[in-house]
Length: 224
Image (tube, rainbow, N blue to C red):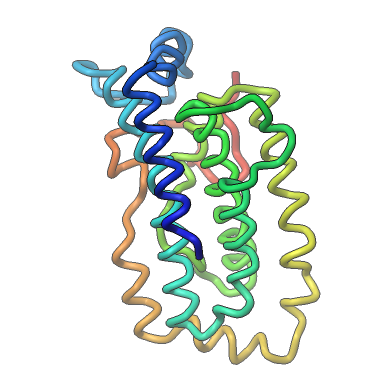
């Protein structure tokens, strides 16, 4: 994984934000229209939301490193690494629909692509193996980011994730004879221990989501 390049890209965008405050102005404009399900600290809503977005972006290299580490510990690195490389490329060489997006404001979109790809991989592994591959829970954070990016563009990003994943993790992979041994490796004590090191991302950042009548889940969106 080329995480140094990711971190350098984020650092440059942060320096640009320090000079122009483009992201902060965008978030300030969005605050009054945020979905009421998004809970922010009353005393510093804009600061909390800004810190959330910056940390959401900065977490991309950490998520990819964590995923690679857990995959290595579980003995499944060869199957997972191609997916992580796609998530990395979403950041370093974003698709054409991202043209014109720059700074931290633009990196929010690219971070959403990377985090959503990891979330979709998690969903497929949960369906087949009963537990996620990547232990950091970004589901709520992704729902908040989806709201901040706005529709229909966030839906276009979701479609880009779906198309990217289609060729990487076809259902046929899970029908192979090696699946049973694979499942047993996922239950290894070292893998279970690795899961416990990564709490929910949104809870770390002081941003929560309350959906009445149902729990937030992968693929859900906040209704407008």
